[in-house]
Length: 126
Image (cartoon, rainbow, N blue to C red; front, top):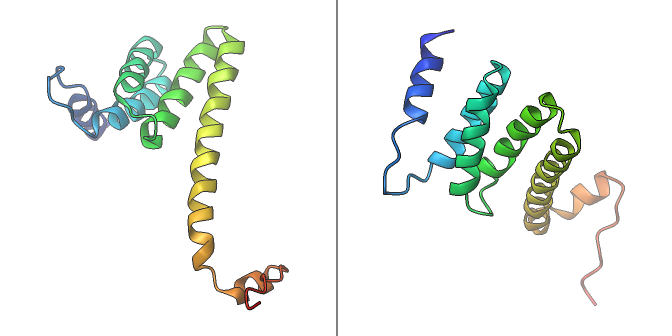
């Protein structure tokens, strides 16, 4: 292991504090994914619980990776139905976020881009 991984692990696992660190849910989720790849499933599962507890509903930077890490741990432990359910949630959250971003940016797409893709822009003149 490189020193950078251990430094990340040390920084991502500080003692619990009473103030909310806005990066803590994301850091815990991503560290959980690393620990899963290292086969340290118990530690990873603990971090997914922490990330789940701290992350806001709209925080996809934490919601997606903690679910992916937990799904892998559960699958390795033979809880395939629960693992699949959580993995599907992860995909649904990510797709919903992407579609939302696409729909917000659709108004800024120039009409020639639609034509290039084979779509006729709506006639809003009348």
